[in-house]
Length: 172
Image (cartoon, rainbow, N blue to C red):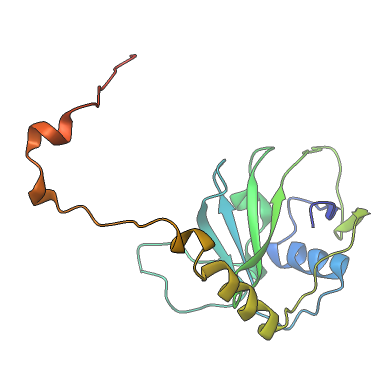
């Protein structure tokens, strides 16, 4: 689905719930499933979570962010901010979002989808097909029959033999 994308314009005063609804509407998904936003770092690693409902699992010293009551400006401050929108918890399918541009003088009452490119993936996957794909991905490789990999018992070597042939180069 590399040719799939959506562009949504939204006011920073709008909530994550309004962003969620705009995304779901733009791809034709129903709004009756649990989903979450995750703020991500530059490597797309998940950090803060913004949930649809109170899950009751937040530690007392951690903030819990709810979509309905969290305005976008509270967590998103810079262009380039990355987010992951997990729309299918069962299969961990997500949309990856990035703030492209902030326009300070512009104000929108409701978010709008300004660009649609490509066909969105299906909201739900056929679980039989999903399980079949997992089986194929985790099944043995044809190389398993050809290559014989033995575990190395570290007691078979002394420290000098283990260090032979490896040089540590410090370029700094």
